[in-house]
Structure formats: C-alpha cells, structure tokens
Amino acid sequence: MKIDNTKAQMRKGILEYCILGILDSSDAYASDIIDQLKEAKLIVVEGTLYPLLTRLKNAGLLEYRWEESSSGPPRKYYSLSDSGRAFQKELKMTWEELQSAVTILTTRPNQS
Image (cartoon, rainbow, N blue to C red; front, top):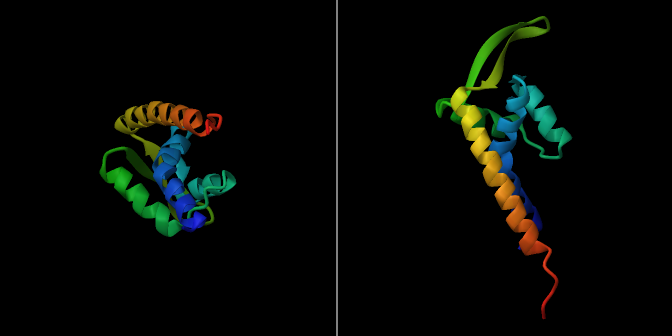
C-alpha cells in the first residue's frame, strides 16, 4: 500500500472544511484560497479547487461577487452564505469530535 495515496485521500476529505474555514474569516479570490492552502501544506491545484467552489456555490453554501482588477480581468470573490456559515459551524463541531476520537485511538499505550 502506498502512503502517498492515503495521504491524498485524507487531504481530500478535509479540503471542503478548510475552504469554508478560510472564507469564514474573509472573502477571497480563488488564487488567495490556493495560496492559503499551500501555506498550510494542503497543496491544491486550480483543477481541484474550481469544481469544489462551484459545487459549494451550487449547494447554496457560497456566494460570489465580481470585482474589477487593476492587473487584468475582473475577479470573482467568494464568501460564505448564511447557510454556508451554519454548515461550517456544524463541520467545525464534527471536526473537533473526530480529532478528539482520533487522538484517543492513536495515542493509547500498546497493550500487547
């Protein structure tokens, strides 16, 4: 079994939560979201991010607005909708419960 595949699956599973977390603090342009994910070592390419943003928007969790740019075409800035904020809060509680459970299960002393 290859560790890289497992690591990639773990990252994919929390990517949606991380994107909602980024947008909970401020509106963001897609490249800003990518930069923040890369800073956190959750490397994501545009081909992964854009379909996810579209899916979250279509689910009513995100909204967007166009803003003129001095360095090119207008930019699409994403923000959480009210539903997105509520969803993000639920995911946060779920993440905290999951994190606690994983910590308990993976830090038990070896009982053999």
